[in-house]
Image (cartoon, rainbow, N blue to C red):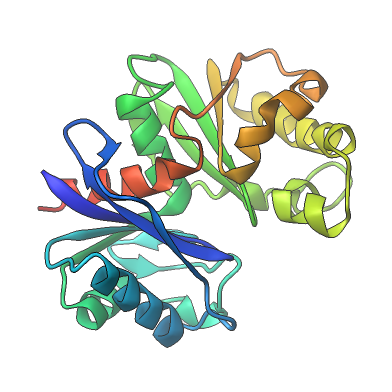
Length: 246
């Protein structure tokens, strides 16, 4: 089955048509800048633009930076707070004239990795962290997702919210070298390990492409791997989620 997968982020909204049987993108990925401010109406308009780009008329899966409960956004990270308590399934479906199913963006990335990537056939506890504008998380136990963990918002020992200290956006804003930033990110992963004792940690998002530049700074016990889909995991997982809703 082919489904349009979309990854809605704080800086970009990107999508591609996905073969949900294999996890492969069957079109080129297309990216549009996230509107500023990223209000519900503005994001819905860009999503409609993306759907139009692909001449798409079928189901759409959307990875979205929020805790999502039955299609309703309960939080809002790096987008307008006006999204809180908005039925985004309904909003996006109306804007695109396509049935849209929304899932937490990191949960989407995790679904892709657990089905087709580094987490396939992995038992025990798996933690996926997406490193981008914020820090997203997806937590699985024996392949089952615990949705909406949003672990980028935990507070570190230094009193700072994790994604305000160790996201890729912070690395860029503060002009940190990879080693310096890697030490910050290690503090975050160490806290995650002390809380959940994962058997495997998978890193996705934009910064995962530069893993070689900071892997020496990571001192956790669990093996750390980069997502097989890198920063395309959210697109693939969003399509997989939409498939479960059909």
